[in-house]
Image (cartoon, rainbow, N blue to C red; front, side):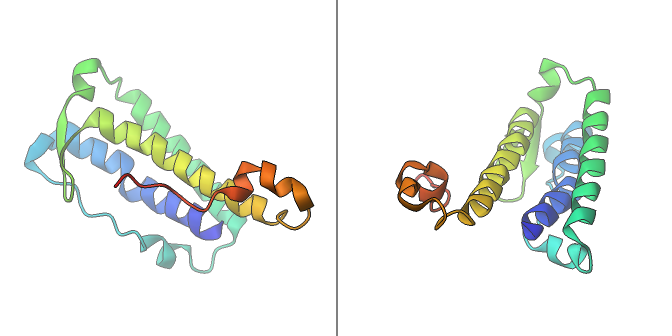
Length: 140
């Protein structure tokens, strides 16, 4: 769980709002910086999970405050930016991905937490979907 929260913090600092600002300021003319999927490791070193949770709460609060202050309109959501790997994306897609990214990691956290009960639930495990899940599906 430590790495998941560290990853969420790193994404909060380097991904969602920074990219939204790039879309609004530069449109497609400036590509987003690449995201370092392991960038959280060095930034989380020496911290406790409680510290990371507090840090994430503060950063997310600030991001949501800033997002609210943008007072985005429908035409803003249709503005386009450039992802380094995906190409042209809209601000709406970026913001939806932010929410889905969080849900992906909440799902991951629930699987990690549920695993501690794998043996304790005995035969009920076959009825508990969180114990059956082996990861994330990917369309082929």
